[in-house]
Amino acid sequence: MLSKQERLAKRSAYNKKSWAEHRQELREQKRQYALEYRKLIKADVLTHYSNGKLACIQCGESRVACLSIDHIDGQGYKHRTKEDTGGGAFYRLLKKQGYPKGYQTLCMNCQFVKKSENNEYIDHWNRY
Image 1 (tube, rainbow, N blue to C red):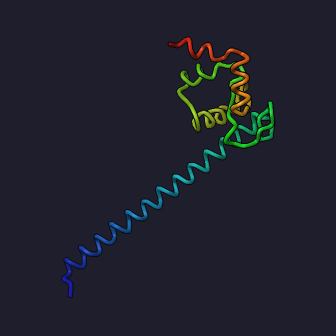
Image 2: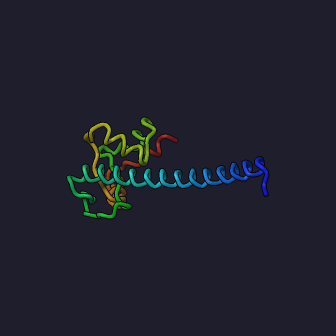
Image 3: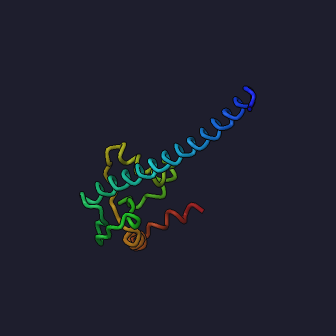
């Protein structure tokens, strides 16, 4: 038979293990929630800037992984360095600001073509 101190030590070890497992589950749940929230925000912003349809306004590409926000004036690099926002933070910022003008939803191919046709890459390379 175990002494009282041995029983308490055994219970304490079990509780620590149980809490560690529970804490890991909570972390995973929080991570999954954050991923889903970012996907929803991105879809919401992309839909707004593509006139209510989640697709590229040039070619109609609708796969979310291919879509992103384009700065109409071609000043995306300057904006990213000034605001220090990219990825999910940028989508949250646009939504928080009430969807300001000057942005559109394009697929990466259409963005590349636009960038090439308008020589938008020049400002980016002049920083060196």
